[in-house]
Length: 212
Image 1 (cartoon, one colour):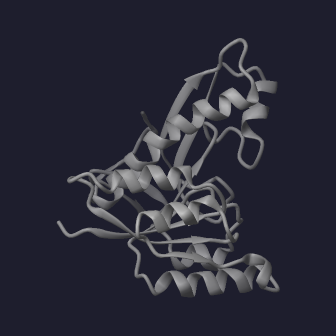
Image 2 (cartoon, helix red, strand yellow):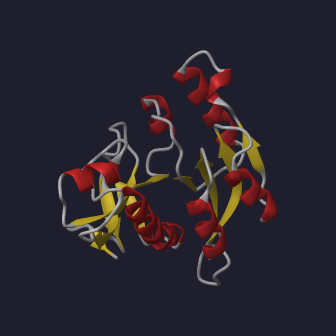
């Protein structure tokens, strides 16, 4: 099986990017990160890419007059790398409908909650405030709906009685660093796909979210 091209979009430190960089070293991971693009300059994630000899680009949204203009430029840049998979790894942008349509079925996102709970920001704080028993992370295909695309897999952790927002963030990040590479591996190994807005795993419609 030939390796599929992966492009990663980031906005910050790129810890999930690092997990993917490590994952692509596996002999049975049929994907290769061909570029990393950040919408913010001088972030650690760009350094991680450069250290791994991966092209690292900055395309700052603040340089564009509108969300549409930025997304158009971003899509144009992405297409030069001919990606089979685009991974949002802490990419803090709400994508336009046109952008999502451009790459439908190729876009994956990870979100730090057990979706459909807590789309958007401050997920750890909200889980603690609501006294949830469990918290975690979800990987889904990206659609026009914020954090609302078809779910693929989740990992969860029990919230301790003395849990703080900081400790919960660390616990969930650890889960993400295992969950995201696994889902990416399924994609590049042709085990998952999106058809008619539904997830198929090994050619069967996914009836339940995979729990890892």
